[in-house]
Image (cartoon, rainbow, N blue to C red; front, side, top):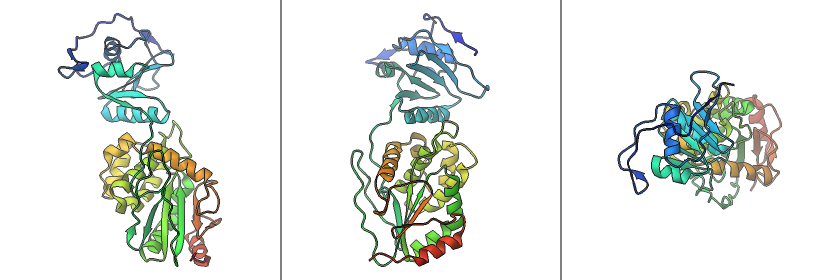
Length: 330
């Protein structure tokens, strides 16, 4: 492992301070050495910073001190935000600004000098129109209030006289993508023609560092669209799941996918404000009966009028026949 230690007294350019904030914006930090020096000058106490090995020259530059301090210099602000979001999903608290990210016990003190935003995974309200699923009928999206940060979704009465369909997906799930490719248009038709209320519940079961936490961040992206542009939800969902089968989550790419469907939600996708809700909705799906039948056992799950579809999700004829065979609840 290639390692480089910095002396505690590494010199840096002075930054003028006023009441804990920079009187003038600090000069941009362009090297890991400058970031380490700025960290120490701002009150960071871990002086034995060691640069970590990078597999490629395009990887972010990381310096660490013990297990509690990590400094990261990214290629640009977008990459820094993505790194901060990943650390947030690892339940770490970090300070992010411009191209850099800092994890340290003294973030509040460091923030007073360097500015930036402290990011942590904390209770937050869910998106509008998802309780926890987003539902569509003949009149379009079924409006729903956001789930309170520390609360439960409002009870949803089953529709009367038409089919009640719930589709549970994980954005990273291959067979979920296959199900939407095969039957997505038919599910939309059933809702739009008033033959069914079709609801979609995104959950997070497949997060990995290698895929960029695609399950949670993908579900957050779906929540962003549901919250701001619900009419774009269904085409975006199909496009997103297809996209994530071949690549790790990238906020810029997913933002472009949303924009293609008419949803301008780039800031929401990058900052993941609904990550807390995604995790809570997933827990509720696993622990509480869906459609009053049974908790989630895997994805994709398709429930029609309280009966789980056990056929081939890649066969649109099989699902259509299954739906037709069910008796809507009155």
